[in-house]
Length: 200
Image (cartoon, one colour):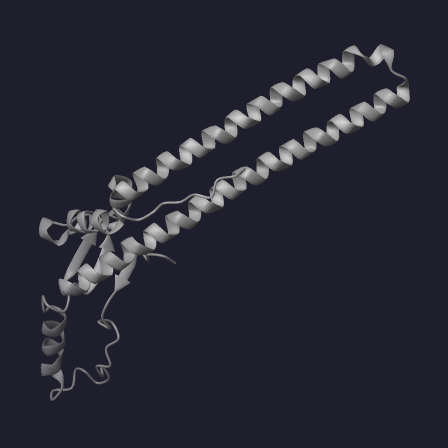
């Protein structure tokens, strides 16, 4: 999965502390030591990131969206032209029906249906190619973003990164490092070439 809802960058939860007989007198003092350990700010430092906001506001995704819409419009224009062509051709076949034998008319209808099928098939392939290309670039962009988030979190000694959409409340706004990552992400992707495979 590209970016889990909860990222752990240190083995905080993988404690090997022995809790057997923890209430024994000679071990009781260890309880408070464990609590203090996991309340340590440097160990439990948490960061908040708004992954969706960054993608939505990023220059890379804006450029990608515009390119996708442009190519999608071209495909739609092509199919409209083909639809008009097929409509005219169908009307011509019907008009000339009286000048054709039953066999000739059936053959023309059969060929027409085959042509319609081929045009629909090509249109479907073009859309599929465009969508797959778009999804591939989206994944590459998200991978870059995830890498930047991880690098920043390590630099800031953040051990747990939470997606903002999954956080009900946080009172310390300083733990949200979304804007910092957005700026880094824009700088990282400003020279990135976004090439969508254009159908013929």
